[in-house]
Length: 67
Image (cartoon, rainbow, N blue to C red):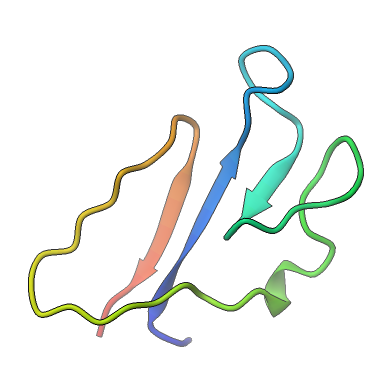
């Protein structure tokens, strides 16, 4: 696995919670579901020598691999 992170979230376009899921900003063209091939989505990444801090949206999850 490549060091980096994946952010999974949904919008509030259907009341409290949407049926459309985003992975690193990619989603489906349908009204519900997620990207067709999430395994092909590259991890977001960056270089730091300091702390790592995430600001997360409600109902989101971050998957993070640090080396």
